[in-house]
Length: 217
Ligand SMILES: Cc1cc2nc3c(=O)[nH]c(=O)nc-3n(C[C@H](O)[C@H](O)[C@H](O)COP(=O)(O)O)c2cc1C
Image (tube, rainbow, N blue to C red):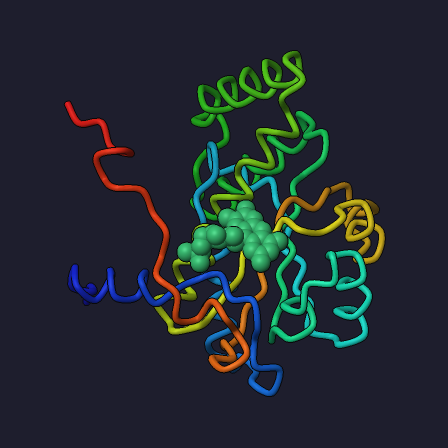
């Protein structure tokens, strides 16, 4: 297995920034795009439950409509692909059963061997429901997928902008997310930076000093 060197990894992460202006003439190629979709699929989630759906928007008309509900941010229209990451709304016990069925299908595990896991998952879901935290729990998983997407794109040399600056209800309506039983959490515009138009492209990263952030024991 090949790995990046420490320097290469940090170089990729330094190169990445939240792009404000994409070059609308450049499109992510099919092979790169399917790799990014695979990276989303491979994202970890609590118990592996994957309480998410990914809505991929390339259509210019749909992007235009979404931009009007995104504080007019140009990334929405200028990017190559926009991914809207949506969380499962009001997860049900049946969603756990569906996942267990999938484990059986993929790994050929006898279902009775999954009883302990099954009990734990139902217990966690019930507790989250009682605490009114169920949708938050699902939404948190979406941010893990976002992180995977951002890092993967940076490693491949593809630019991105994570985005919360949009009106979720409008996205849910336009993309049919609410009809699917999900709610939009965060979006990510992907493509290639327009170095000349983007005032952010040459600015230093603003980060706290390590000692302000890390506590080491
Ligand atoms: C969850 C999330 C939502 C964000 N929403 C927006 C957004 O709507 N528009 C935007 O231009 N940048 C957005 N950003 C980008 C941040 O402003 C940016 O990541 C931060 O300033 C750090 O800069 P860097 O990513 O360029 O290093 C968002 C970032 C995150 C993680």
